[in-house]
Image (cartoon, rainbow, N blue to C red):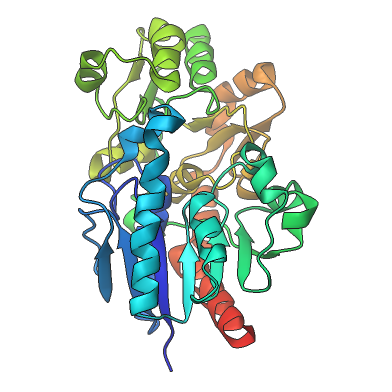
Length: 368
């Protein structure tokens, strides 16, 4: 009998997203592959989801991504309101397994509701943010964890590490990304604009080298410059951009807002390299895989998932500090674009991820 899986996308963005959307892009990649393999998919998310599924459960009338930048006291009820709808759906229409993608709140409420299906919780975030929760969480044999990279699993609290049953990296539908062997565009950085991602490092290095840089991604929930400038409210990401990134713009260094679709893939496929000078341990790295699918080399700090995604000297360069990072930009042309594309096809293509998840679903469903 075919499995029925409820996919909890969370309340922040629709699936697929319009432009930026890390987890939501992953789900837009995974779900069609699952359905092509006979899996019945129930998707719980906000209004605006346009992905074809077997059943869609709208939880909130609009995406709440901008509210993520608000103080906790002003946004804490959003994820809980979403989860109340998810739990109501599970009790009214039971499924074989829940695949949860909502940070902390999703898995905590699903674990507390012991009358619903077993859960696979994919860890899309830096676990250091939640030591009290993940350091003490007990899935009680019905909630299981999936990491995105070996280092993420290794750095998990010992208590959580024992509950990680697999490491399934992210993936993209490689055939949808245009391959270009000629890399005559600017350097690019595709990510949310914030301190953890190291946007200021990329801008400063490119300014220092006299190289063009296009930065694409939202700032504090804003997808375009006009919207950001109209909003004078203070939040950490907006303040960071205004104080530490915007002064570095000019001379070919520019923020173009949050873009998607053909505009984004055209930018990325022609780029000399994609830059990821993150200060944190990036758990997944969807944009890294998108760059590789375009045949674009990646230059990154050797942190988080990066060593498991990038083959140093083959598909890009891994740096230990800012000085070494800067030294690799002039060497971007040494990387063979065909090797980048080949790595994406063999290791990070959508069917590869779907098969791994299907094995996990079947294993969990048969043992609980």
